Length: 499
Picture 1 (cartoon, rainbow, N blue to C red):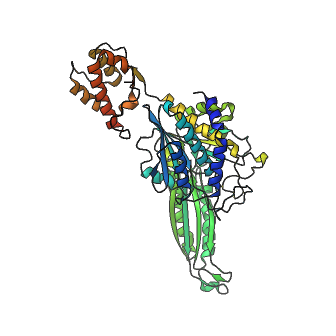
Picture 2 (tube, rainbow, N blue to C red):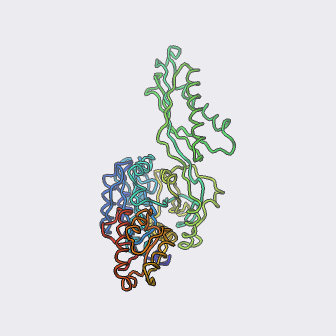
Picture 3 (cartoon, rainbow, N blue to C red):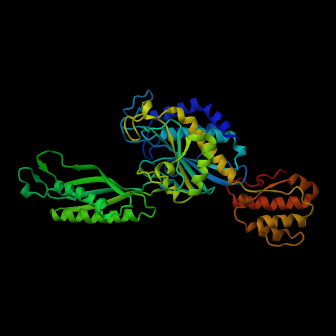
């Protein structure tokens, strides 16, 4: 399969993918509440011939391939929207008040559905398995850990993972792809909530009250000293108070003031984040006490930094250059290896298996796409949908092919002894003598994930020469294979066995 063939086949799906994206865009849903989106995606997958299964509160998983032995790669699309009222001037705008697909997750879902169709068309060529993940609740950093807790990386076990994210309002042509090639590519994020309690009173008598607003304002200013004076110059640690609330009327001092915000670092072990949280708590309590108030500090919804595996990142960049030529760029080279400040909950997966992240330009600022993600006027260009589907597909096919199980041709074997010697060399089996098939079966049963180690060909020739012995051996290996690969139906033969 050539990359141009994948691009051509993907381009033929453009109208279908655009229709899917517009449907999803009109019906944005947030968090785990995907009453329209999840059944919609399930139906599309079933129409293609998949048997999607639930994972966690609102996730879906579908498997492509599995007809040949090999490894498993995970491709992710997030499905949730944002609690933002849409202001974009598009004819398929949100029909749900207060919600919009302002981060491009409708694009992601359509692209992965396109990849699902392409992979199904080439299922017999897949050297292993592609696990398609449709994830909820990315925006609140809860979807990925929920699916992980419910077996996302198991049955079959995932060996590598990839995600693709669209970006708009950028000074680069549509279709340019940035591939992160190693290290931390996105910051961690953790929410905080500070409640300052005082004593309410009339605005005309502040001396009889304890003003929590003044104390909270001083806490907000004092917190800035952490990054300015307490972090080393090479440490990335920022926090932003994005919401401040106190009181309801202008002439009353309230009982409490509250602030909410985020902490972001690029430390994989989160030592910097823990130090910031310790100092935030100390400062909030100290400043509040100095102003006769009390403070309560709460931290929640932690999302780690995104870590890209260097080997997988470098390989992915090579595959994408095959597919897109000079339109595939090394993100690390563009940024000098500096991580972005945004966060992504697929990072939970990146701390479990080798992962790569990619970013596809889907809206050039010079062509009217002036706003970036999370802005109520953001727009994404449908023109890149088919390219996104091709990117997913080519990455999966190429990585699995590069990590395919070696093939063992047994067609030229002349005797049981020669067969055993060959298998012993390839599978590191212990010695057995004559026709001691029980001992041989015990040896095979001690292997781990036999299908990932070896693929067999030439059984038709071997069966003609040694019909009894080859049949027994095939039975032993097949029985072992169904034990080590429980997702396959009982009695299935080893992939590659042509008898």
